[in-house]
Image 1 (cartoon, rainbow, N blue to C red):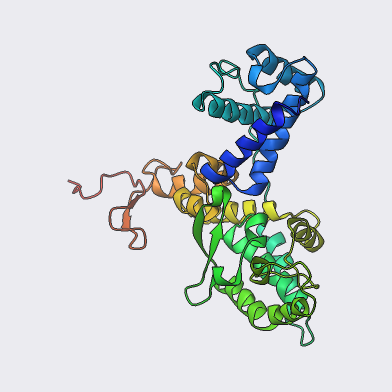
Image 2 (cartoon, rainbow, N blue to C red):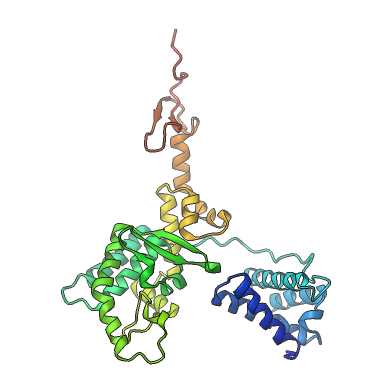
Length: 343
């Protein structure tokens, strides 16, 4: 790669993503990796990022396809290139965007995989039993709190590891989460998860924090306020939380628990807007994928609430549900129009 011309450009773009766009470090690293992959490719074609042409981008996508890279990953890399060249164009460093008119690789829409409710209940009950033992270690209290929080709030693993003690509001029953783009949101947690967090904060974390204070090493002030600590008193890593969830259930992962949270809420009647706010999705179209997983629930709701939803068509009645508001009427066809007297 032509480090003389490409690396300073990539460094400027990284600063733009962090400072002006407010993207999180992990997102910036992913963009940097994709751009360096493209830079290495066009270096083999005796080009640099600033002089890349539409043919280079098309050849790069074909190169990815030839090396077995799936269309979903290729589409992500193309999206990264579009953002990069849009920035160059706005900054007047180039006069033409080489990604214009490049068609994004078609990808199958992958439905998120979730656990069955019984699988989640079994996993959480086992962690609860371990944490409720009279001689339970601080780590058992911590592990239960993490598992309960992942499922109750649908948090991303990076959001869990970034939590500080001040983010937990026990009185109001919520946590303050910093998601993608460093955007903050308030996530309510249920009674059971809140109890697990309170027990860990009261009995587990102080013990782990004492270990950390005995050998601070290269600690920062931010590390000292992290909510979840390791047995050595250090902040937990994403990889460690992933291992914890895998140990609890080999079919599970932190992100699968997030999908399970959303899927089970939709199945139990939650509206998409509420689920969107809980998960921190910027676009509700991202949340709509859960309607495919809860199709059975949607069919049941349609049969219950739509005037012609019942196949028998033999009954009609009106029933205002006070929990859903007076404006929502359940109608079941009985063979006569409601309110009309029969002669």
